[in-house]
Image (cartoon, rainbow, N blue to C red; front, top):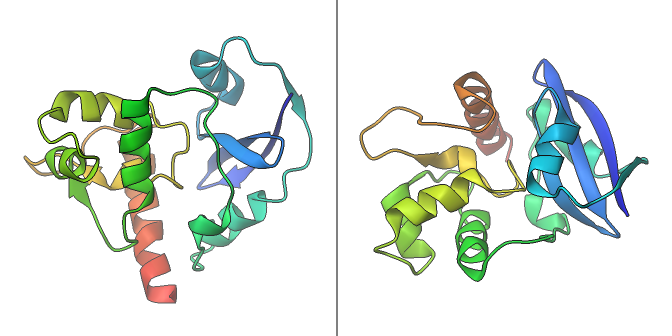
Length: 164
C-alpha cells in the first residue's frame, strides 16, 4: 500500500507518496493522484501522515535541507533510468548540469536524448534535482510542472546554499 500526504508549497501543493519507509514519488501537480497514476496505474493509495513533509516545509522556508537523509525507493524504472536518477541525486547543491554533462555522469555519454527522457520521468523531483538540468543552449528548459515552478525551485536552491 502506498500512503500519501500533502502540504502547501510555493503557492501550490506538494504531495509525497511513500511505500513502507521510503519516499517513492513527489508531485507538484494540481492533481497529484492523476500525476502518480500516470506513473503507477496499478498502485493503490491511502492518506496517512508522512513526517518527511517537514523537510519540504523547511526547504520552502529557505532553510538548508540534507536530502540524503531521506530514504527513497523506486517502484519501477529501467536500469538506465536509475543510472540517470542516481547521477542527479549525487549532484552537489550548487551544481547545474546540461543533459550531455548528466549523460556523462550517468555513464551513458552518447545517450543524451534518452537521458533527457529519463530526467522527464524522474519520480522524485526536488530530491533528484531534475530542475537543475539545463539545456546547453541556455535558459531554464522544460519542467514537468512548468517553468514558473522550476524557477522558484532553483531560487530555493540558492537560498539553501546561503543557509548552509
